[in-house]
Length: 626
Image (tube, rainbow, N blue to C red):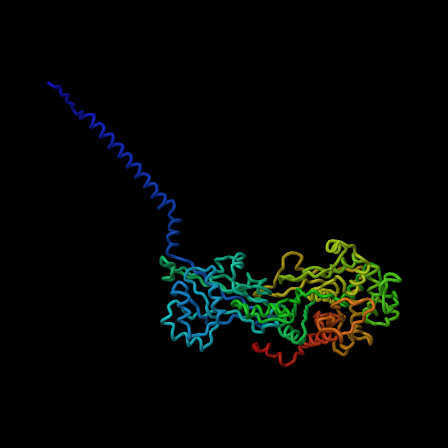
């Protein structure tokens, strides 16, 4: 008989095990609940504001509204950069089916060029917020507006928007001085507040527009809107209006600027006029110019290529960047240097032959007057522009005194306070030549610099600035474009924006030099005697800048040369000479005779001092753009 073992259940043990399991589960659940509660407290209490903001951001968005741009006005309140309302055809890309669909729908309704389509597609690839409209065709005519209005009901995502457009009423004569705005690029956004410029269409690129961008732009407005999951605006919640940019008032005289530009005629060249008593730039002309309105909404490839490839270089700012030999306009400053360092006196006589030689059998440096001038003193050397006098003076001085003295007048430096991109020209020195050519400075190099030729290169602004300092008898105000921002005078930080005085050992030399320059006009042998007869006094100096070097015994004959090889014609002047109110530098590229810039300067003196403008410039006074 088999034995069977019976197993009895231990209910007490099972009950104890069950209780332990229940307690463990309860503790575990309590721990989980505690963790959840702690997390809820963290989220709902400690991090409430953070997650409330994030939640709002998921359904709310700030839309930036760009401010109206500040105006640019001349010294008389004439508007040189304006804002004009236009109507543009815009597209919200998220609401259209495709670009091909849009092209097909607009075909035959309104004429849109290939360049406009290319520019539109380029804008689509750039940074923008969702549902931000993009301009397809700017500045619709009344006929185009009417044509598109009829079909807008079936063109979802296409609309006509009123926009403010930058407008330059006087065009090319002011392009290099005022500058222009252009379409914002990705590179522009790297240097500005991206949020502030969100929705803005253009930004200052050059000239006053570029330098004073932060002032002209203003403060953007913001609209808080409710958006759906796709970022589409559903409702407006809150709004803060933008603050317009501040108006900028220039020292520039609009009529004088336009008149100077026109007086250059068909010549390339530059005119810079400065008020010696403030450093304010009255005219900053570079010819040829260009229409800055072409750049406002992005210039087409065709138009830009045309400007870029033009042999007359209309995009090149000659006033700030043009490098020219100052020629004989440097002689008053060379003479002052000779007086300052004891290499010459007012009474010392010099026999001026038709040439100068460093060595008895060496090269002959010729005077412009083949037979020479005979016995001359320093004053006569200015009146008749005696080259050999300055050959000898420069040879005796050497380059170091010349370099040190001319530096005081802004040569070799960027003199202007509030425009970017000015060239420093070239004021040579021993060190410069050694570094550039690995050669020493030769006496012949000094001889050439003595008449403003050779290695020396200066910009129209630098020469006009030096003339203003001389007109002011050594008081040096750095040139500047802007007089006031709003109603407040512009203040430049540091000593660079303040007047300083160039001290001479004999301060009477300032007046004596200006008087010598007066005789350039009044003396029977003065090189600018054609300007005699004005009711006010003019002090001036002519100059003829060589475009290429002549051989020792070669004569200059303009009749056998191409126009591009003709000499540059230069003139510096100030009026009234005793207390100048205006200083001018003018250059006609390949102009030949210095009579051209001299006549131009006299016309500008008459206009500025006596309001003697031709009647055709009266539209400036009426504020009418013609």
